Image (tube, rainbow over all chains, first blue to last red; front, top):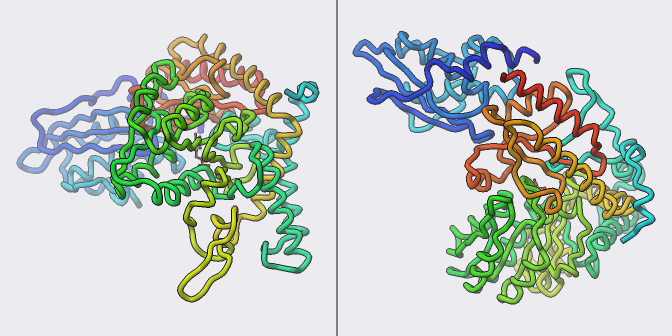
Length: 132
Length: 414
Ligand SMILES: Cc1ncc(COP(=O)(O)O)c(C=O)c1O
């Protein structure tokens, strides 16, 4: 419980590396967590081989949602889109280095949901994208 | 009003009535319950009344002739009589049991409004409504083409009554507003607003979810046409609430849900509805909960609503004073004299969810989010607030723990 607000989370929340937007971009997707109004937008640039060359996130919300977005972007820059499709809940928890209750899990997984919906080119981000 | 009760207000004795207040949370801290606006805690008197019903009297009500059925019916209807007296209705037949405030408002929207409103008719709401007093009217707007207008909320968290008066020139059919805001705490001038509505030829529905638990409410002095409230916010159980309505209006309204109990006579192709209040109560109701509701109003009456309001005012004034001292903390809503026991706030650069989560480590229960009043938060340009709320069992020590907790949050986020 006490390491829910680990230094790394507070640090990524206060001083994110990848906050911003990319224009132009190849993929852009945004969604809310209706529970708390967290909002995340993710922009990606992808090269001809399908590799993510640059990425940014924007939005607002709690430390968990914003820090996990920053950590997630850090983890996917330079990676092929195909590998993003395989990311799941546990990968985000590993990035954060914490365990979360069901309510805060939604905050943590918002960025992955947005990212995968964008990569799959879906109209809407569904919870199924981040289950397992 | 009842000075002898003021003498009896003993916070230590009151806290003993609420067993949950002595429990510890995961972290080993004693719970500091500052979320009574969402739902109140329950005194043993209420818990025992419901247990006693199940242990001794349980049976279905109304049609039975055996001892248990008669006893259950008497308990269920006796509770209704005391609830009616609690809000000074003239008779128990004006009090309809519902599941909660939300269902009470929906009952008016489904029954009265569908029978009486047509395309183009105006309903006035306010910008500080809970979703339960917005969505039913939006649904009716989509279905019937009624129009909606909203009394604006000022920067101070008060209703802009001048705009209200202007809106009344458009001859609305209904004005529906909350007596007390669950976010800002604002106590609206219900009596005056209802008088103005009546002068304009409109009926008035009051959302009393936050007022009945905390203030002495007199539906007849207010001259409210409909008044909605929930037991669970006033020391009673979940699953039961009430709608007060003026009898002439209720008599003329078509039934809401159809089924058993709400009928006088059923043929294969027709029915005759029951008399009030049963006409609106289809199916087996929440009997134990109604009895618990009755025990809750007994409990509150015995302590005295004036004494409770006085205590809450003292705690709220103290809380606002202490919270205002915290750098980077912004409070929403009017000053203590114009509000009930609610303190909604934001901390610079720290999301309300993080505030609530960190406070929870010290056992402090506050709520974070939009508190089912999303449009109000949008108005203030924020997605969410943290909200501490107080009730008869809240203490200044708990306020101090909250303030210390907030300083810890600030420290963590540096
Ligand atoms: C002002 C107000 N209105 C309506 C409601 C809805 O009450 P319930 O959920 O019991 O129907 C609430 C409860 O949060 C409230 O605070």
